[in-house]
Length: 256
Image 1 (cartoon, one colour):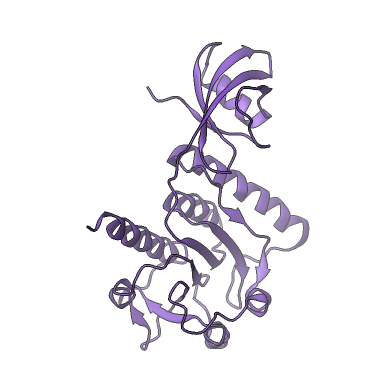
Image 2: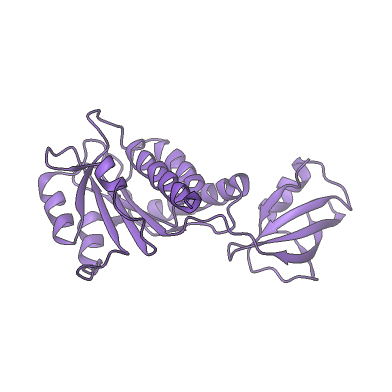
């Protein structure tokens, strides 16, 4: 049986003991672990630490932190997923699956056709919830780095602050998921070399981005990309693209 994996914040130090944060402590108690049982801890900075339970209190759990082990399960290039937030609980599932698939940064956006519109305290609460969802997905999937979730912004604000990409730099890709007839196909994108830098993926909300939003994105260096003739949901399309990028990276790494 594999040792349970738990995220701990702040940074861990090998050879020390600590009281687990409340969320991790509850997890240990639910699993009914006992003193001496093994754990795997990570703090989001890469790598993992072996650990063991020292003591179980009514609400506190003390652990002994062992040595650090270098573990790297990230994609070879950074993927930022900027998306028009889908409504209801679909955003929760999207954050969970995007984390499992390897997204490094997730930027929630409010777009012209957005159903879900968050701001102020409500947006802050949802962001904290999504960060907890991402942590849980990292614990389950084996990732040692928790994706960065940025505060909710409007698409126009985010694009205005996005620097123009350097010309003729093959290490950077910017994809805009679109149903436009002149969009590249996923096979065209797959034929391009895998970058070692950053890949930006922009996906719209229910109904997609409107023409003005697509034009703004293209002015910032994005290129239209089509995933095929079918219309995918707002929470399906970005995950399909992420899965394709992960497969491309895996295939390239395995090539002789």
